Structure formats: C-alpha cells, structure tokens
Length: 364
Image 1: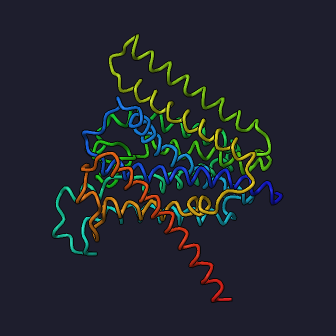
Image 2: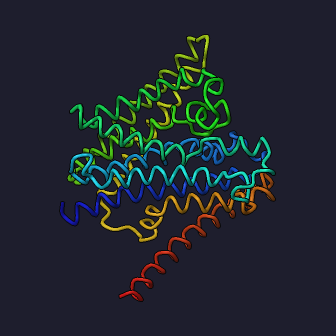
Image 3: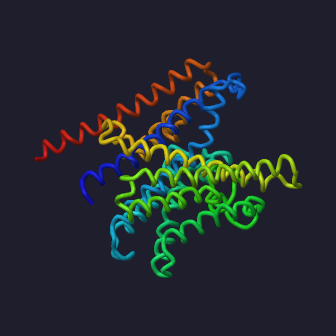
C-alpha cells in the first residue's frame, strides 16, 4: 500500500469516526438540557435534530464495526496468529468494564448498603459500550467461523447482521427476565430497561464489519468514485424498501404494527448510514489532508464518549449537569451548552496530543 492510498483511507475513516462521536456529544447535551416545551417537531430545526438524534447510535455503531474489522483484516494472517485477536478481546473486556463502571451504583468499591433497587436496575441495563464490546467479540467469533468454513467475511457478516435484526422481532416479545438474571437478560431485549441490547443493535456493528473487511481487502477502493456510488445504491435501496414497508403498514394495515414498524425503522437507519458513508467517502476522494483536530477526535472516540457522559450525566463519584439543569434550558442556552461541550472535547484531545509530544521529547 502506498503512502497516498493509506492516507486517503485514514481520512475517510477518521472523518466518519469524528462525525459519529461529535454528533453523539451534542445530541446528549441537547437532550439532557433542552426543556420539554421546546421539543416540537413542527419546528424544522428541531425536526432535523430529532431525526439525526435517532441516527446517531447506528452511525456510531456502524463506524465502530468498520474501524475494528478494517484494522483486524489489515493483518493478513491466520486467526490464531493474528495479534489483533488478542487486542480485540482486550477491547471487548475494556468496553464492558467501562460500561458497568459508568453505571456503578455506589461511590464505595464494595459497600452496597446505600444502593436502591432503582440504582441496581440502572447498573444492570445495557448501554452503548456494553453493546459495542460484545459486538466486537461477535465479530471475532464470526471471523473465525469465516476462515474455518471458507464462507468468507461478506456472507458471514451479512447473514449474521440480518439474522440479528430478524431475531429482534421475536426476542423483543419474550420476557427474558423470567428465564435469565437481569445482568444477562438485558442483552436480549429492552424489557428490563436496557437501551441497546444485542438484538437488534449489534446488527449495525456487524454490517459495518462488511465494509471494514472490504476496505482492508481492496486498498484502491478510494481511488474511484465507483465505491461511493456502490454505497449510495445500496443505501438508497434500503431506504426504498423501508418506505415500501411503511406504506404497507399505513395503507394495507396489519394486526400487529410492531413488526412492520421495527423493520421499516431498521432499514431506514441502515439506508441512511450507508448514504452518509457514500457522501463522506466521495468527499474524501478530493481531500489530501484534513485538520489534525478531526484526526485526533476520530482516534479518541472512547475517551470523548466517557468524559462527556460523566460531565453531563455524572457518575457514582460526581454529579452531572443534568442533576441541576435537566430539561430546563431554552433554545439558545442549550445551543451554547452543546457548542461549549464540543469545544471542551476538542481542547481535551489537543492538550492530550500536545502532552504526548512533550513527553516523547523529554524521554528522547
């Protein structure tokens, strides 16, 4: 791979990562602070924000699947001799650990006497970090299956991603808490309060792995607009199918809207994410360099995610802004808070980068 080709690929991936995490930062800030009286989708600006808010998690998850599998498949070695396997497993453990740490119910390490039933329930729910951690583990398992069975990444990931989407239609109807402890049942459905159970959300991460594998195996993909056109065609195709499903439920009518509504929303999100990737990859064709800030943001998504959550929502060891100002701001104070939060995250990654440079200079 030449330096230019590698640079183009890094630009594309970093732009997607930066967009995903910055969208999540501003989304959390606005959602935590904006008063209910201003949440009206009849206002075009809020309607657009509300739509993008619903697309943030799929973008973030799909991008995580791209990056992880791209780096994994860049190392063209058998599964058990690939160092990325061990790194991926460590990443899985780290993400799940941090997910529970953010929801830890007490400021004391082993004293749980003050924890309320509500606190335990919050601790047991599955959030983004848990979901991505287990999704990366699933990708590792599927990569092994792909190699052993010779089915290939594309078939294995696509089949598994849509299987998870399909199983969600049935798993969400099952009360898993009747059979499993809450710590486990939360990974299967939203019935006990989990925000991002494996079904259906892991499907977005695994389908992102399809693109990550393709990028690793086709180093010249970004040198042609055909790649962007291909993503756009698939994205528009899923959007059309989502529209047809929606029209079916609206004009024909079904007894249980859960199935058609769920299918149309999943396809809408998947189609939008693919179209967004098409746009970013097309823009990257004519971009040789991007500001260093975007690269740093893209490479520090986990840190940014954790820090901004602790500031906004707090933790067992500190109060968050939402404790004092939850849904109490008007529009412009909310906008200012979101911009200021983005500014803080930018300053943080810039200072960290500068500190690393100084540290290296001191060592050498």
